[in-house]
Length: 287
Image 1 (cartoon, helix red, strand yellow):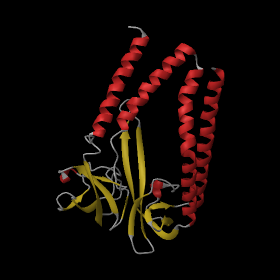
Image 2 (cartoon, helix red, strand yellow):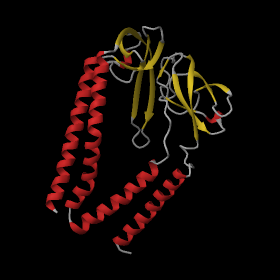
Image 3 (tube, rainbow, N blue to C red):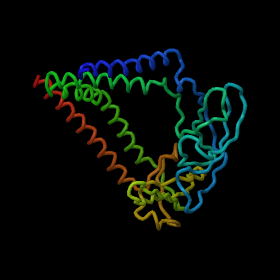
């Protein structure tokens, strides 16, 4: 079987995967569509123990109600319970999802959402079909088809989303100026150690834990993944926390550094769209 035959097989397999996935979505049978989603409320927050692992997240007690039965549940995030809770305070709402009818199989999410239609894998399979067709066109008819086929859709997508991305980043920069400043303290430093199975190299990951109280009295415990120059020796360090008044989970230590970072991201996005658009134009001209 020649490579054209392999292309037909490639497109047939992934095309079938895409069609099955889209069919399941239309029938409401995907995992995302069969998942119940509700809001949970943090009732208690336990301060992480100094030197413990950061992988499990901040220990919390959460209450939620099953929309189907109306039954109330009070649970903890012990074990594998979805996303790691890295910012917590009493009264914070988080997302809880589980298979319908099985609230004891709950998982936590940091952001409350309506969920999707389960189209991630079908869309990826369709992309693989498209990539196979473009690859064959490039081999049969020359490299310009690769530039046009891959960079063209990417440039169109980037141009479509770029204005929204710029607006989001501008809003984020404006939000930095509106942040409230309160004193905070590093109450613990968490540590995880991993050993490479191939060469035995050991790597250590340190995560300081901040505690601060918002202006309206919410006592927040949060992982600080960046912003401290010496995480290992930061326990007991007093710092200034800048947080969004409507959501203390959005906080920074250095407002100016964060502002510069968002501006750089905006510039990178613009330059990236220009590069792929130029590559697509080169491919079209060279055909």
